[in-house]
Amino acid sequence: MSARPADRMDAAEADREPRAVEVEDVERLRQALDEARQRHLRLRADFENARRRTAREHEAARHESRRAALLPLLPVLDTLERALAAGSTDPDFYEGVAATHRLFVNALREAGVEPVESVGRPFDPQVHEAVATVPSGRAAPGTVAREVRRGWRLGDTLLRPAQVVVVTAPDDGD
Amino acid sequence: MSARPADRMDAAEADREPRAVEVEDVERLRQALDEARQRHLRLRADFENARRRTAREHEAARHESRRAALLPLLPVLDTLERALAAGSTDPDFYEGVAATHRLFVNALREAGVEPVESVGRPFDPQVHEAVATVPSGRAAPGTVAREVRRGWRLGDTLLRPAQVVVVTAPDDGD
Image (cartoon, rainbow over all chains, first blue to last red; front, side):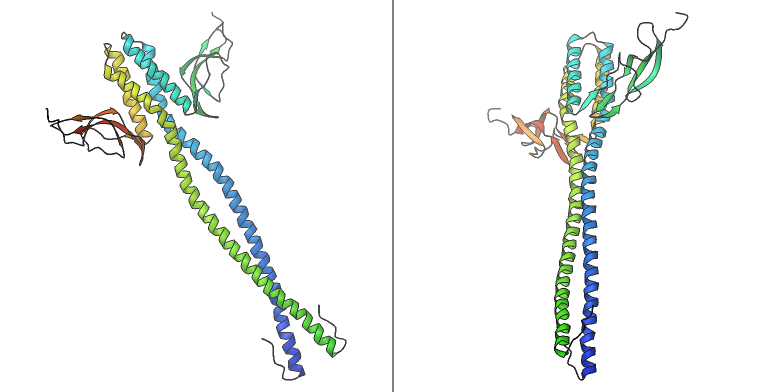
């Protein structure tokens, strides 16, 4: 649409008018385009961050699900181990239960659960929980003398600390 | 930047030149802006879809992790149940193992694992696996007579089908 000039003055105005609008338009459009591009870049960055966060959360969710499923089974194994430790007068039945225990530990290993090493190791507050101490002249102070409850790891994390008895220096009275 | 006219002809040309460029610019910019906005909308839709897909995948990952952690424990329970079914001459030891068994089933329930109902129910190929048939005049044909291996569900899905013996119509010879 071109302006139809009536006289010189009008023609000059008519020429200037659309040009002014277009210059303004170009500026406005350039700015809008710039904003749109910036917005797009920000959204893309958000998307990328969300993707990375999701991958991390995904892994954490997997781990937490395994943890939640396996944790209640540890006291079951404790009870089985206590029964086996008490012994039995029925060797056949005892052997059947001992076989169950071996299967149990293997199934836990298969699920990524490994026992914490304790007896004879230096006490490690990251994986051990001291429930008592015992003076000893044979073992080095600060080593684990006995395990009261077994500890378990799940992959790189601790599922449950081992409850242990820790060696102290022998009493002067000994 | 305004053109400085030398004469009428030049002035008209000078006026037309930048205008033509600007009109083109405006069109080009409008198109670019439109494209940028379309691209933004598509990216936003992709983002939204990814978010929904992620939530679904997250839930599936949780479920699959629980499944993978719990499935290897079912044969452990089978072995324990076989030992208990065989009985023992040592009542104290037997009771300790029976207590372990109750804890085990409770721990599985806590983890969302429930036994499949079988005996006396109509055979259901969704949750039952027929390993044998038995003719019977008492029970209705197609019902489950006996469970050879217990089946388990995890939430709404089947963790392991029950292996069952299914009732058939009595033999003519009976």
